[in-house]
Length: 200
Image 1 (cartoon, rainbow, N blue to C red):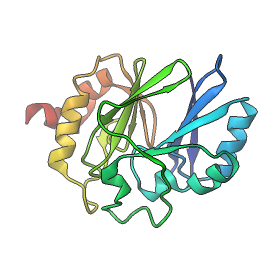
Image 2: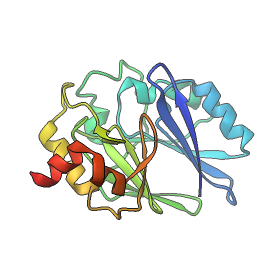
Image 3: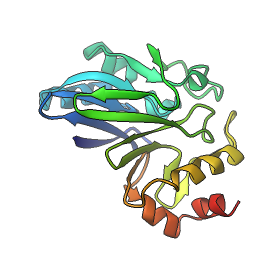
Image 4: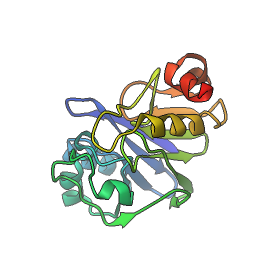
């Protein structure tokens, strides 16, 4: 498995290209902006985009979706809860073909991504787990967690989700929707929201 990170848009949303180099296939996680740039990079790498996976439906995670799909059509996955756009923050940019939910697994060549529903930032937020790596969207950041003050957000549910993520192996690498990578070990040590979740 290989992973390429593209920070995109005004909010520097991390778009991830996750790929099996041998099979020449990839998944794109959270195409937040600059869909043409994402498509160009996928093609430069010699890959076929097998699917697009959305951690949630906020505009800064889907802003490049339409342009990406124009160049590289593929299935787009989101949860039913976020397909309904309860926050109103997709601004009409959400496109999807398929729904996924807790426990679903998607195979991208030899890469297997498992869906973990982690509500709090939005009702349908997910993290995607594969081979010791967690794509955490806007659930877990280095030293912080996603906002819960948007419509449909919930701090109680966020703390439940963080408590669940804290049970992952400490060496798990966390690749968040914004900012730098971290590990579960580091977040257990220094993240006040994770500590609050475990104390609750």
